[in-house]
Length: 394
Length: 154
Image (tube, rainbow over all chains, first blue to last red; front, side):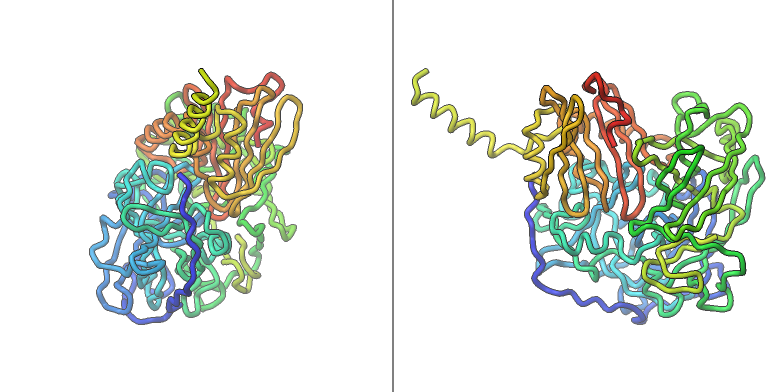
């Protein structure tokens, strides 16, 4: 179906940051810029190698707030997304013009997609001041759509338990989830204006786009630091660590000496060379393992071919390159996933295959990469003591 | 059938076709590339390779390649860009087969989040990437021309 193109003729003014509301102390953390993150916790966020936290969402400018747990911590995506079914406070619907409500479709590398409303909220991270920001309120039936018929042209998630999260905290390399592409093109596949069950793609100004809440913070805005402990070779039932907001902006987030910065290309990719093959790479807490192509590693028996099942643990290494010519050889292990996945939930040696396209094989450094490391994620255009984003540093 | 009847038939056909949804690419004739391009509002470039051609549609931060065999059938599509393309459009008659397999995958426990590698009875779909850089491909293994291997689809 050809989407009706709608050109935005008006400018939406969204207060950038710092408007009141909230004042939440951030559950479980003592420093105002530290989010507690956990893995292996029971409840909604119950998949293997899955990192979750909680965020507080408020009706903009008010003290009507709700703290929501089981929020996936994702360095591979941008912006706050919450299932509408777990939200109990009303937010402010973004509109293109009166009666034309704005929805968004976001797709992920695993083929999944989320459809829902774009609404203005105050978001409180740990004990930071609230930031006013458009968020994605996930709802398959938003604007008269459905799970299998919607602007995503895919099946979209409808159930937090099935998705494995109540929402996503996308704190990757960028300020906006789509950026200039969606500001300039009314035929993008992200943003839609809907009236009476009919949705057409629209150009969305940056101020209307779903955004990384970190870059709107008053001072800790240039990135995040993930600090996670390591686990034994047989895995661990649970994991507890932190996401510190800001890089070199407070006494508790100054990078120690010896940290190397790997600047990504403008689209957020690094390069990894593995066994002589060059692959595009991401360092992504939202991926549940190391995913890379290696035809010498046996897949697990059907039907669980998501992972490798080598007879003995494979000792491997790959070299990461930034576009700033910085490189690091990273040793890692891949154990037999069938032996690992027998009760524990967090593993530093879970690996699986990825698509091998000769021009662009993928090396996905998922959650295992973060275990036993301190990893810095620098946001695009934001200066820090480690350089200007987009970058990863460790 | 007289010429008048033939003209009437053509008019009826045009009328019927204009009202139906765009009939998409994979497994269809090369002409559907132009329909995809028009539906997406993009530009198209053509490039010849031994035994096939590649039609590249450029649209809204995305590049979509449609691989056409010498008999004029689209046997593969590949894409790269800021987001995901309209796969209902690109997979055409194979879209439902893709959706069924994807749904089955998403119902698995635990639900693993990883680059997608999907193989169905007739189709291979692979996807990867992250915010601002998503890529993937889909092809019909039984329709690959003799000289073409999956690694040519990129």
